[in-house]
Image 1: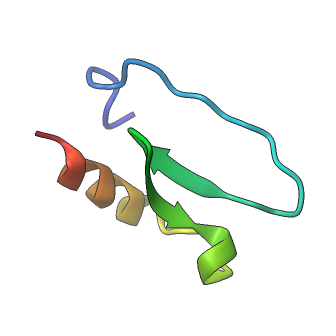
Image 2: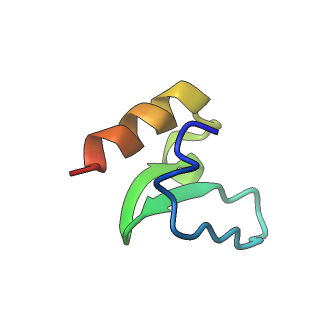
Length: 53
């Protein structure tokens, strides 16, 4: 895990209809609903790193 020292909490919320979204501190950084596909994991890592102070 690339952020194990930095993550205070992680919540997985089951949803219907194939919804997959990544939200960090209230900010949507990825939505499968909007793109129609699952993200590349490295893309998510880059987005999260870009949000770190």
